[in-house]
Image (spheres, rainbow, N blue to C red):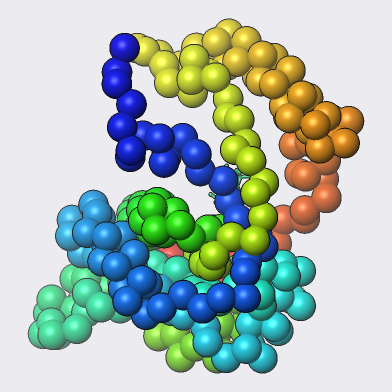
Length: 248
Ligand SMILES: Cc1cc2nc3c(=O)[nH]c(=O)nc-3n(C[C@H](O)[C@H](O)[C@H](O)COP(=O)(O)O)c2cc1C
């Protein structure tokens, strides 16, 4: 039995927050969060990650109106997290630039950038929660990518991937149970039977979770509804290519 500790307790208490108090979050607090977030692992230490805070309330409102997420406009702090391969070109001579520009057009660099940005986001979320803040990470903000292109001076090779709202929580949504580990952590090979058993068990857990929130559903039913309700956006399949991040 592993003894619990503050870090484990905090990680197990995670819940995305989508309602914020009307209370500012100081620059010092945000700096502490980002220092801890950016201290993490990233692809080859290329550090291909940039967060851009959107401070213009009109723009935050426009993004909210476009993607229908009120917790962008109402968040004291809202950031767009980007994969950033532009910075790796700075200070390079023409020969090195040609090599780098060839490399970053390959899918593996897009993937490495997305994973690096995701790890940074996860760490920022944990750091923020450790300071009593609430956050939510949002892929849905990509529906407003044309606004980022118009307003944020994004160079080639810099592609937004997620939104990140931060503020003092004004709700207690409760911890959302996750799949039993037996369905998510495997040994030796992928075991379809274990996943099926885990999903069946989890459906019961989530039926209770939703039931307590007056919703008659479970995980598989809820997923089917979400997949159907949220359309895929083919513009977003083309967007990486438009930024020079090709699937070469
Ligand atoms: C890749 C990714 C995309 C997400 N996109 C959205 C989003 O567009 N809008 C939103 O409200 N939450 C979004 N979330 C938050 C998830 O809905 C949330 O993490 C999940 O339901 C589990 O709930 P929990 O974070 O409270 O444990 C996203 C999270 C991830 C990791």
